[in-house]
Image (tube, rainbow, N blue to C red):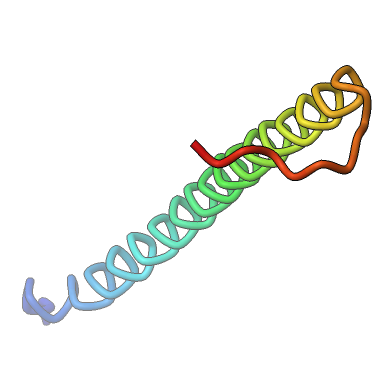
Length: 74
């Protein structure tokens, strides 16, 4: 007795779909890690920029004599 072709391939289709889901999960995990690293680098760049702005402001204040006068509003 021969098996019907559709019945014998039903398990293969299920395994193929399962493998596709597993591969997609792995790829999404890698993409998520890459995205996190990009976001961390952007946050670090922003923090460095803000720190530089503070440093420059303090240097300007020190070089101006460090007086406590309020700056003139223009």
